[in-house]
Image 1 (spheres, rainbow, N blue to C red):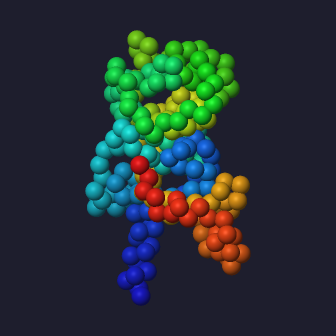
Image 2 (image 1 turned 90 degrees about the horizontal axis):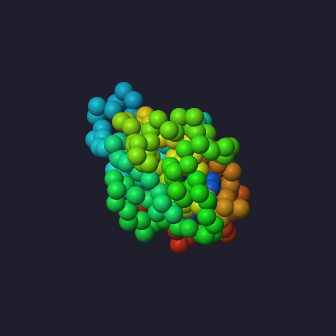
Image 3 (image 1 turned 60 degrees about the horizontal axis):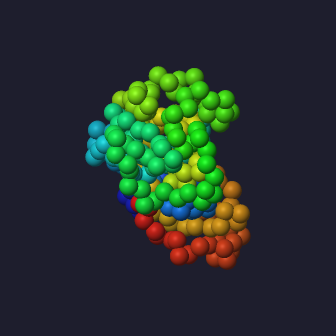
Length: 228
């Protein structure tokens, strides 16, 4: 029993962490109310036991969970579009990396509404949009009309390109902010019915009422879907 307890504590502390998707920014890959288990082992920060763990580099196209650079108490989930050294620009909503269009079968465009800042990034270096919190720093990373990702940072976008607060608006994700990558949806509930998040320490079955609510409302077809 003691050995099992130690294993579980180790797994929860260093290997996996539970999160709930609160917004539509990653639809249709992830839905509001999806509960995720994230792998912290491969490229999250394990602190003093990091030398024991098989870390690897974050790759373009992977989904990551990270501390929001503007407010470290919040967790965001986005897809990595640019790794250090990449040159990025968007033209009419299409993403180009190092001069070539990126093949993105995961990206969705639901409204069809054009936005010159969002869709032709970073063509408009000077903008008064309140949502663009890094406008004073943006120009220092732009060369020949392309955004250059600096060392130790990543450029991320939401799959729901027209409804995502991402690197276009607040900048890069530092490597130190990355917690891990989502592995699997272990539960999914409609957004309006999902129980309130309790941060990184979600306790799924915290009462009999919660269990009954889960049985009635869960989107069981999404259970154990691998996140890609």
